Image (cartoon, rainbow, N blue to C red):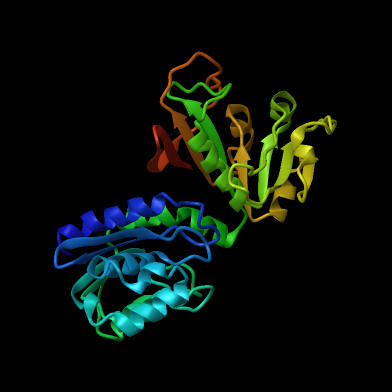
Length: 335
């Protein structure tokens, strides 16, 4: 392994985290391309159905050589794939390609990245983790069969952290907890910026079910929709023993979704990807059910409600991102 491998893989991993969860049901993946020591591309997979990280990076890298190429106008995976096969002219043969996850080996909504790389014949392909999805795996062998040098396991722990959410929703119902707070842990009132609210609405667009506590519904009277991003509105699960709610609360008037009022958590198993929006009370109740936490931290110090004294939970930080001045912290329970 060359000393720069860790540096470039870290760039790829950090780029992928910017799109974590937004790529559901696909994994978040990042890719970096270096040619003769020069950094040409830092890209990621941005949404299911759109080009994979490798395709985005290959396009960006090629355009550094031919900025006015017709490739600029191509956004469809198959179109980019076919263009590069026909017009690469050996451009990638002295490139090193760093990708956080083994290039896919199957044809799904997009063509096989491993097949394309095998034709472009890069100098090296450096991979953090192998694909846990058997349907898509096998890319490493495809590359090796074309005598392309493959390096595995670079920043493997960081790569495993990156695909942890993907692995949870591969095998079972995936439940994560979203909470917003100030720098000193205050949780009541308006906390998040408009930019962070856009991010939350984007998450709502991806999930199948949004869970919220009954007291919060009665107090805040929320919409719980995706109006900021014009996305789909997830079904709602109101966790409450008391089944009586005013039907004038806005969330009940949003069309094309189901609203469940129940304290039976087994009903969650009817859904695949679930976000819980809440604070410490709900976190304490559901702590054994959640897979990870998305904590949104506003850099303000304010008076207000704070952590409950009886809560005692330990977490591992998977990653930290920024949305403007606000921080997104991805946390995993330490069992």
